[in-house]
Image 1: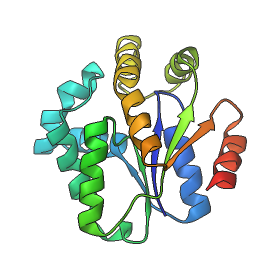
Image 2: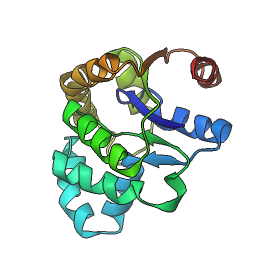
Image 3: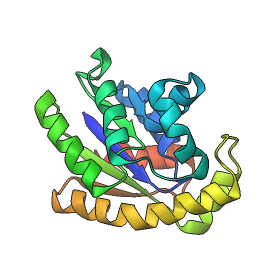
Length: 181
């Protein structure tokens, strides 16, 4: 099974990706993790990405596509995966579809973890990631609204969007997702 996790900052994408990984025995491909690792290791792509991440901005599409291409060709993704934090735009979703077609790995579902903006802020401020400061959170929420609605429409048109209420307790959200897959 190949899943894309969608949602605003603090919606539980990482948490639910981890839970689903355990339940479904699939690797999680976390764009946030990949970016943080590349930045921490000062890779050439990480150095280019760092200013965007620090501002809370989305990386340019070609840079994101390069990151995801490098990751999806690794061995552990052949039988399925959970992609968290990518795509962020409809263009990236289309590019991902082209890449997956080339790899013979069609996407099964795009899971949208739905919460409101106040919950996004509250949950984000309660985390301890280096880029979770109020200015970056506000920027990420703005980008979420700007880019995610067309992305949700893209997957809805392809009839592979599952919207899940992400307000309940973590384990309950996981159960809701598993029941719908």
